[in-house]
Amino acid sequence: MSPKILRRPEAERDIVEIGYFIAAKSLQNSDEFLEAVETTLVALAQMPRMGAMRRFRSPKYDGIRVWRVKGFEKYLIFYRP
Picture 1 (tube, one colour):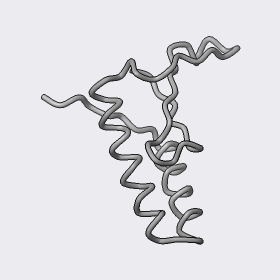
Picture 2 (tube, rainbow, N blue to C red):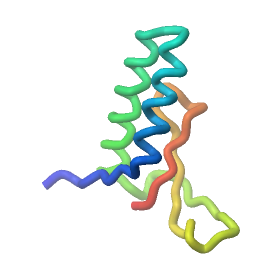
Picture 3 (cartoon, rainbow, N blue to C red):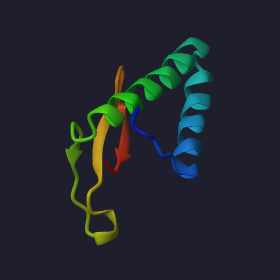
Picture 4 (tube, rainbow, N blue to C red):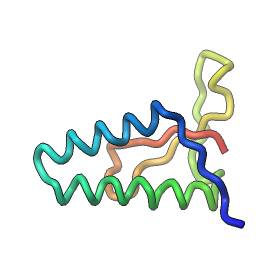
């Protein structure tokens, strides 16, 4: 059984908006970004502790980790294993 990835609607919206932003300059780069997000999410699902633990002031964010989108290192994925 493969690990399950739960995506919040806000995260989906962000991914799409970033894809559109990149597409304004390059459709190919936009496609590559969307594919890289999927690949990165699958990798995180398989090895959920590879992201770095982040600290936030609010306890509601306890357990949040962060990992870069492969090939698009300026874009980060914040997640809970």
